[in-house]
Length: 625
Image: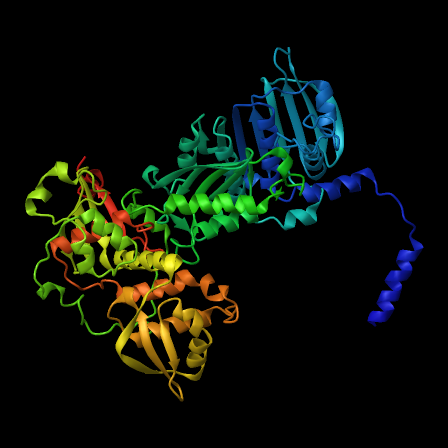
């Protein structure tokens, strides 16, 4: 049956000679490449308005743009002769001498208006400066009506009605008006951020959605990314050879479940580029929970001859001649900007409402040992004389043990008199501790009338993680032989996994060997972790290694690729746990250490380590104006 049908189709094709398609069919095919949905129409029309030099653009959408799209600008306008050519394919004023390298305009292909006219009812009304009247031209389903006089202000007004009326099959594939409008809005937001020197107004069914005046770049970013506060924005400005990156990145506490909060602009052109998206994800990898995406607005300047924008008719994709350089400047600038101590970038509780879930550690994964050793017995030990605090802090950051006692002894004692002196605490971003609640959270106040709450376990986990990482990268993590080697019974798969990575684990300060049957002998553990449970630590590491199907013990880089996750597990075993009482000196010591440690604003899993409320925020809760 299938063979007969194939022969029939082949015979039918042979009977038809090759012929040239009609102009109307060619236009419909081209329209399908450029005009996919209302958002594509709006993008092309607004880009034309921006290229015309307009500083005020109004966009009005009816029924999500399916029924009507109206774009009005105050740009240079078009003469009657220009109007006639504008609706013809491959006619443009934006390319001089066929130069496809030094393209400075958003549009350049000369396909947008003819494609729109082939798929919808198009009307253009335009008036140039000092002209006595405006002129209009109409196109319906690819058929053009002549230019005629019209009433209109300086600039151009484009009206698109009944999108895809000429291709009903394509119209059926459109989503609901709500979905189509949301895509138009997202696209306009990216264009608005790219061009803050232009006032842009968006209306939906006669209702104003946003009306942005001419703004600075920072003001425009805050106007569009409404879920981020000014104090949570980190400005960046980096130069790498011919590449220049500026803009703003959000604190790791402000994140989303999708990449919709990422606005990337290259040479004033908003783009959705996979190279840049990957670099942003890598840049935030150390401070963001898995599955969450940061909020950024980045502006990259690239020499024209190192960039190809003529990749796709939609012009949202790029091709860099130096992809490695683009990745390097993005990753490096983001990581450097985020590598700051806690307290420098505000983390407001309301910002965390965008996170639908918090990190939940696997209950069966980590079994903490009984509270023994120097960490648990600290409260019973005599007070320590503290001196040369700065020197000790530097020593601690370079790889010393990170128990609470060590942190505490490395810093200055805070007496009650010091706490009362406001001038003494002005230099502390996290303020001075005033107490502990639920034996889990540290409360502190700053000289700026702010209240800070710190999760002691999450904070100490990050401190340990960073110290482990620093020591590993500089000299390898120092191991400490166990007084009595510990024998651990494991499953066959767990045993084999650890033995496969035996050499790599030694670089992390863990020395193991087979002990017959399903047992393994642990001879040494990382010195930095102090007294911990060898069994719970190794089981956690097995989980990390088994979770990566691509991990290969024969490749030296295999374990390094999962370094952060493994160090995070190790750090979690040593951190001050929730439910442990801390005295004032310990609490203040932890705050000072957080201020000195890179990325201390989040724990190793991306959760915030501290939150801040201003006096005004608290007064709002009590309805005090």
